[in-house]
Each structure stands twice: as C-alpha cells, then as structure tokens.
Image (cartoon, rainbow, N blue to C red):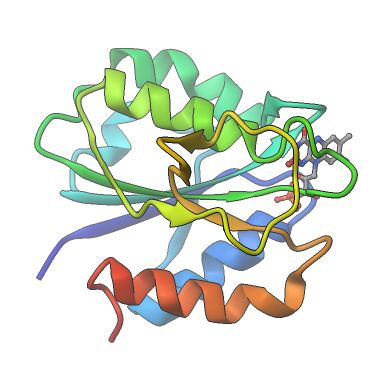
Length: 164
Ligand SMILES: Cc1cc2nc3c(=O)[nH]c(=O)nc-3n(C[C@H](O)[C@H](O)[C@H](O)COP(=O)(O)O)c2cc1C
C-alpha cells in the first residue's frame, strides 16, 4: 500500500473542496500547504498536490510562499500527481498555468510526475499546464464545468491505480 500525502492550497475554497473529495475516495485527510515546510513530504512516497491558478496565471499565494521550500526539497524516489483548478472561460490564455509551474518545480526537485490528463472536453487558448499535448495533471473547472468534477476525479484515480 502506498503511503499517500494529499496537499492543497486554496483561496476561495474550491481546491479545498476538491481535495476533500479526493481524500474521501482514498480514506485520508487532505492537508493545507499553508505555513508548512518541505519536510512535511518526508513521510510519504506518493504525493497528490492541488492548486488553483490565481490572478491571471499566477500561483496561489500559499503555494507561491512554498516555492523556496520546493526548490530546496529532495523528491527523488517520490511519485507525484497534480490536480489543478481554473476557469477556462474567463482566463482562456492562462488556463491552469499554476499547475504547469508546480509540475516544473516538482520535476526539478526530482519527483516523478504521473497522472497526465487529456485536453479533450476543455475550451481554452493557452496553458502552461499542457505538455506533450496533455495536461500534466487532472484539470478541473469548478466555475464552468462543476458537473464533470466527480466523474473526472473517479476516472483519474482509476487511471492512477488508486481507486478503491
Ligand atoms: C482574480 C482571479 C484570477 C484568476 N486567474 C486565473 C487564471 O489565470 N487561470 C485560470 O485557469 N483560472 C484563474 N482563476 C480562476 C480560479 O483558479 C478558479 O476560480 C478556482 O476554482 C479557484 O480555486 P480556489 O477556490 O481554491 O481558490 C482566477 C480567479 C480569480 C478570482
């Protein structure tokens, strides 16, 4: 059994709600990244990290504050799956950008990313979260497609081999 740590940052609660849904699937507690240092990852070999994109392509402030911790972190040997929240209608040119930025930091720290997700079913112009034609993690839009969130979570967890 993998030892899974689930962390999120959230401004208005959407990412926290989604993190709690994923946590309920997995039978664990979602933890707020706010105020933590990188040693919180030490106990886990599988990390699930969730972030919204804030302020036209920026990282959510708690994740932004955590960036120096990530730059110092050693994630070698850890598997990391990301989920991102955004709004493809109001922010089509920076849809889910912060998930892409987080992915880059994770890879620089030696983490192995899993959980890439198809871009089919989304309508946007540009996203730093797209790499090799796929999102680097689960793409969720609670503003425009909230009705798809539950099924997307289930499908993604199945793809990750984490469905119970
Ligand atoms: C001022 C502002 C700027 C935003 N900028 C972006 C953006 O650049 N790209 C994007 O995909 N979503 C953007 N969003 C949408 C949020 O990411 C989305 O509403 C998300 O669900 C918020 O998650 P939270 O409640 O966990 O903070 C923005 C929202 C606000 C209010």
